Amino acid sequence: MKLQTLFTIASVYMMLVGLGFILFPHAFGKGAVPEDASPALIAYLRLWGSPLLGIAVMDWMVRKAGPSSTRNAIIVGNTIGFAVIGLLDAWGTFSGGRPVTKIFVVVHLLLAVVFILVGRKNWSTQKDQQDLSI
View 1: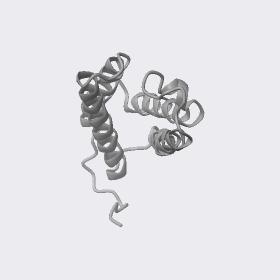
View 2 (view 1 turned 180 degrees about the vertical axis):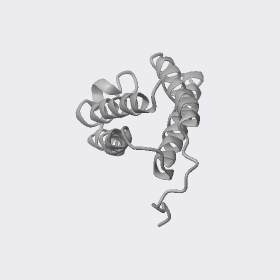
View 3 (view 1 turned 45 degrees about the horizontal axis):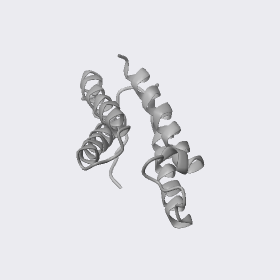
View 4 (view 1 turned 135 degrees about the horizontal axis):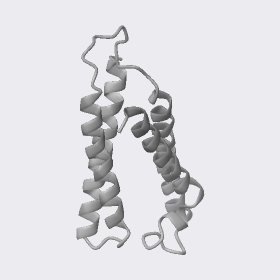
């Protein structure tokens, strides 16, 4: 798989999940969010959609970028993000979570593994002009 394709898939996925949390928190959390959920819980779920949209935009914008330390950082960020959420999904599954969570275990861990494999193949060893330090 090409890195551009992987970034595109991750971007679209993150956009859909982010919008799901923001626009359809009850439907998106079916089985985990009670029908009579408090406005505070709904606001909390919507809050988590916004950083996912930011990640979606970042992945979309970097999808055609050439090798750089910045692109490397985005590869690592996606790898860690998908790996951790996959592990949390697994934990939730074994702790009595919703049955649908098993699907997300597979999706998230698969994305993490693909980011590792494709990212290693496309890793930039060049020192670019841009410094990531703040």
